[in-house]
Image 1 (cartoon, one colour):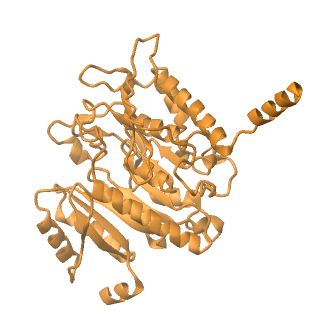
Image 2 (cartoon, rainbow, N blue to C red):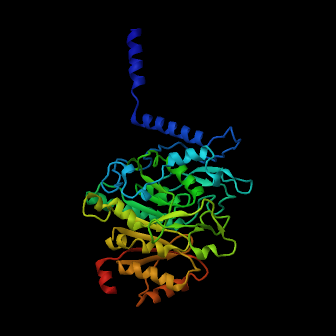
Image 3 (cartoon, rainbow, N blue to C red):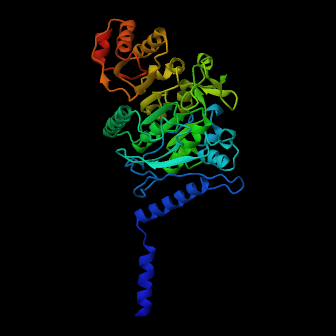
Length: 416
């Protein structure tokens, strides 16, 4: 009888539910991240983690009912990213980058001060519809995002778009993930938000300090934990995006208290207080090169990719990003385009951006302030100049966030 009970106990203990196995994987992952962020005995550096999580949530595919969907990662039909056609477009390995950070090999993070504690990261659980973990800089480094309570309208708009596009794709039998292109990812708020809602994310961020925070978030959420990007949901690129593929450009820090205010613009570098960023010249790529490398523009299986969102926030160089994406825009694979327009830009720059998008079948859908685009554009305009004048008149004292979308056939015919 005793032996029978022991066997029964052994069988019961060996029967782990899927939830228990997932929790075990997450605990191991959390332990690894905490170890990575822990105190470095050799340098005596203390990593500060402010974990505001009320509970431990499943992290691998967590909150994502699309976790069984295949990756869209293609690289021109190759099975391994190491044989990519364009080596400029191989994503960075987040685990490798964080290992370099742990070993104090990244000078921009190693050379910290009390005023600029780049070595500290704060980990929080968001209160979004689908929660996710987000690593942010110390508020002395980035006061803008210290509480990540910014651009609420834009966040809600993105959530709605991803839900809409995903529902449409499922109805059409498309089992792939929608794609989100994040140009100027900063610490990754919109990238992580999109990934939590099931999108596959290609994020470009040239500032290594921000990229480390972005990778901390993506690894902890289980979205960038493989050295092979075909197995990842978030693909980070430590590069800028422009109109000439492979061009090397110097980067400038415009506002020392905001690590998001980095620009490759020479005009930005001439502003008062602007400083040349550490790390030397960085490489720029184009979205057309990315689209060609991923074969999004082809007629084959990879060409069925749906790019739900293109977000561009590059401190005044939005026009160059669009100029380097003409083939992609002409294909109309991109559904919605978010951009920030700086009030310091000349009207001609705004008109040029509008002209490109209108010519390729897009319409200005919403506008707004720093919180994001929330005001629907209802005005009828006879020219691009009239449209730009209308938008500028509404937000004279503020940078403007705009949202373009593909116009319906009727609206295209009316405008033509």
